[in-house]
Length: 114
Image (cartoon, rainbow, N blue to C red):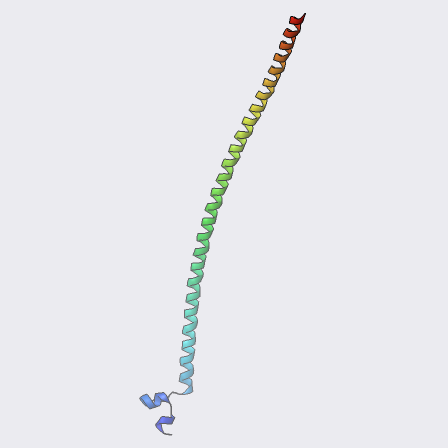
């Protein structure tokens, strides 16, 4: 068999590659590719977990802030309800006082007519 027909490697270096060597090199490359792929997968998964944890912490912080805001609003509403209740009682007393004053005024007016 002439040199040019034996293949590229034989023509360049004078060495022929048989099928077993080519298969072994292919398998080694495949295994290296799988290992690199697994390392890349694990690294990206760890980044995703860190990213998810960071987002979760931000969301928890925002929810805590909202919760404290709601608690503050509840306190304000209770204080307003107390003020409204106090004002309502004062209005009732003022109305009673005005009614009593009108009765006295009416009595005085009727007394003056006699």
